[in-house]
Length: 219
Image: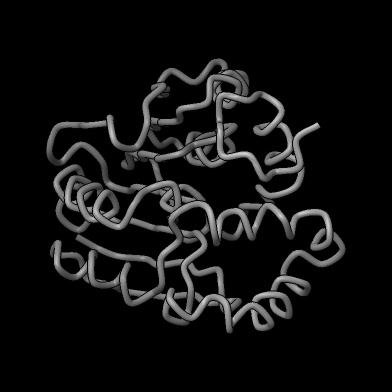
C-alpha cells in the first residue's frame, strides 16, 4: 500500500492515497477564481477533476492537464455530460497552448514537481496562454523562509503542519517531507521572482502556514 512517499504518478495507488489524504477541500480555493460563464479555465495538474467540475458548474469552459491516467479517468467521470471540457494527458514540461487561450489558470500542488529552471519556463508560457487581465493561482509547498534554511525550520513545519493537517499529520508527515527533500519546492522569494520577471502583477498572497502558500497573480 502506498504511503505517499513515492514520486511515480504512474502508480495507481499513489493517486488513490493522495486523493484520500492530501487533496483536501478545495471549496475556498475555487472561490478565489470567482468563475463565470465567460471563463476558460486551465487546470495544470488537475488530478481527479474537482476544480474543473466546480468551474463547469458555473458555466466555464474547462481544460485539465495531468500525467496520471487514473486521475484523468476520475476527472472524466466527474465531467460526464459537460460539453465544454477537455482533458489532456501531458507532463507540465510537455504541455503547450496558443497565446490568449485562457482567462484563468490554476496550478495546485503541482509546481513542486518542476526544477527551478522549469518553473521559470512554465510561468513564462502561462503568461502567454492567459488573456490580458487573466488570473493565475498557484497553491503548493511554497516556503515562507529561504529554501536553504529548511533543516533548521523543521520545527516550524512540524508545528504548523500538525495544525494544518489536524489528526492526519502523523500519517502524511513522510509524504510532506518527501516533497520537501526529494522534489523541488521553492520559497516565496523564488516564486515571486519568476512571476514578476515574467510580467505578472502579484495581487494577493495567502500564507496559512510557514510551508504552504497561495499566490494570486494577474497578467
